[in-house]
Image (cartoon, rainbow, N blue to C red; front, side, top):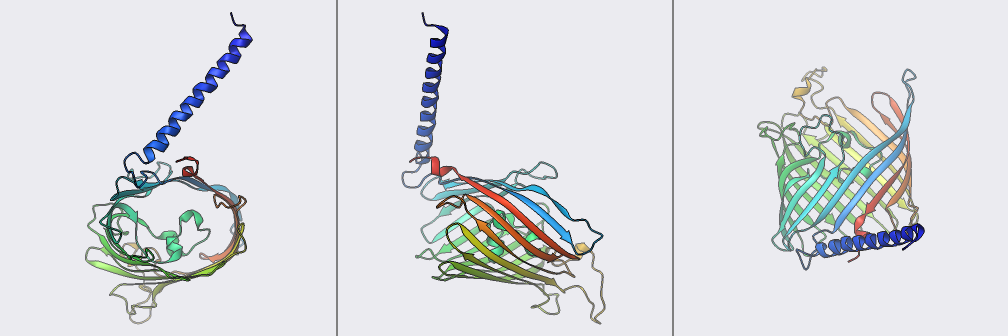
Length: 366
């Protein structure tokens, strides 16, 4: 008979062997299933978890307001993408949100859509998608945006719809036409729609995200966006400037009454350090004065632009730095910035934080 100590040792060995066998089965399942349904394209090519943790400190020029500060979590995201067949692919990103105030199971879903590729040039997709508006601030993942324009802060940027896309043979340019629910809707059955035309251009040192949008804000009435995102890319330096004009046919001036300008410069000092400066200006002078130049009151239900509301004149600017402690990886990032913005009174905003991403595909050995 074995002694008790021998039994414990043998039990640990058996347990380790069973765990090894279990892990081996999981590995076989993962590596096998990745290509199980498609010999040429993986059914899972993206599986990522990401989150951000910040310390915020905000103070105000008006001394009657207290300085506010504390730790907070910004995002919890899970992203998946892959191929079902050679023609069908899927994309999915979910934000983990509390249930309070949610109206639909999709409220925390940024996007979930299926794409059919007719060939390398033409495709069509349907589902919940990014509402296609031009500009590089708008296009950036929210987890990577530290301080922002009034438009970015208020815009509703995910809607259900369908998108047809043309991609040129080089893969550097694509043009998409999107038909979607208007981002003025609070429910999907309001019969309000948007028509968005967008061009993503990629030249050697210059990138574009240009769009023209017709967004229905009430039945039969539209607000037009012309959004021009321009980005210069050099070896270790890049900068962009976004210019957006918003207008309806009811405005006295189509250009210059309701617009945003956003600019950012970034210097990649080396693989570990980035320095950046960013600023912007949002203004909406539409619906603020009558024909005689007198101020007028407009109820919120009658706003043409609900994202940069009438009477807004908002500016912000700041500087910051990013540090990536892991060699040859952007999966862990430390950041800090200082920004000034006017939201009724000048606000001074200091922030430092930690962003981390886990790309599970790195650990699935094919």
